[in-house]
Image (cartoon, rainbow, N blue to C red; front, side):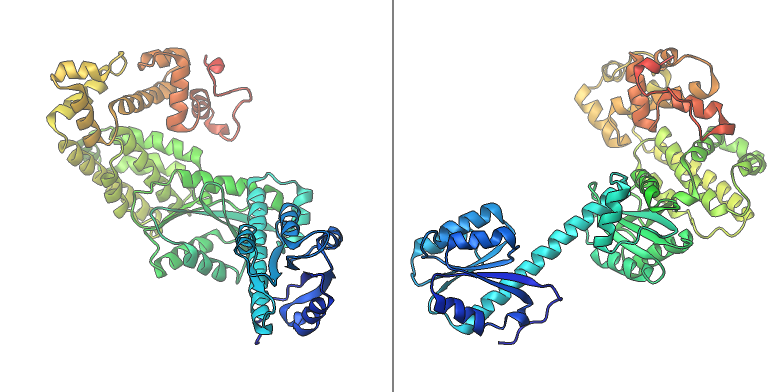
Length: 526
């Protein structure tokens, strides 16, 4: 028979039979080398076969059933117990159902009756070796995936990484590395897109890819002088070409200078992706080199002040003051990063003012052209346009609320510092509690208690920035029953504790360093 070509992997085969004629026929008549078999071993019974397997790794075992000392069925049981990766073919002159059933339970490749045809044996061997090849590739893939994940996460030692990288042909001595993470926004296959990205990027960089334990598809990109903008545009262009814009969100960590610090880039990419609003249509790219979390928080503060002024007052000033107040937060030659920060900031402002309304975010995103800003003047014009549009959107959607829910929101904003509950609203509105809760969730997108907690956190943020009140006092002032519950809720909403938030605001000149000892538990509350 014609033997299929396969990759140059060498196999070891062990033939076990108590009939010398069978051993000789199988050894001489099968074109083993054409199958990639470089080591052919023989044994006369099960005990002898096990002795051979102690010293040699056997990929394929071909064994008779009825043999002295240890028959083939008992041998298969032992092999399954000690050498589970070994594949098996069973030979017998007895067409008994019990043998066939046992063979199937033991996972043999095939059950051949003597006398067998040469073509039948070759086809069975061919199929068995193909299965072995597939198993090896799958195991190698899992092993490689595990090493890449541990490298990215920073949980592998330098010594082990050096050893494993050599086995897996991974170059860990390049000048720079960075991570990119992809998260699916809806169902669909990423294989064609990811393969296209690897193929194109591999022309200039070394690229490795794997799935992490959170379901993110991760790229590790290495090279000399990584061009982040070019890499981002490659991902974006291929997404459009393959019709993947609405399927994925992509984040890019910053470039790091050696393999040991890759985890920094990976964590940045993961953190950026966690903030992605997956309800927004179109491809989203979050690039660590284009923004950072701390300047973003300052920018939110500035926009908060502008956002809460009456739109008529801002129009009367012609927005002249906006550019002056926002300009210090950006470098003149980098307006694209600034607009990216603006888009994220406005999203968060809407979440604070009117939570969980994806239709607002969708319309806002449709007016943002993150990669088309050519000058600082264009950027400032975009700020004005987005702020004006944000007012229109907010007022429009607030007007769509039913009178009773507008009344409920007004009640929360007025009495949030008191120990209010949905029962108080039911008394005020004379409505059934279950129905009011249903209506509130339907129209605002949030449960009553979640909205109340989020609004209290927004008020607490203002006190943290604009007062010297102790954390305990702020907690009580905005309606939390205990400081510990306040700290937990604050961190859940913002990602940091109230203490760290205040430190970041009070140390603008040294944002990168937070004093040691500030922990996120009740003991740090002061």
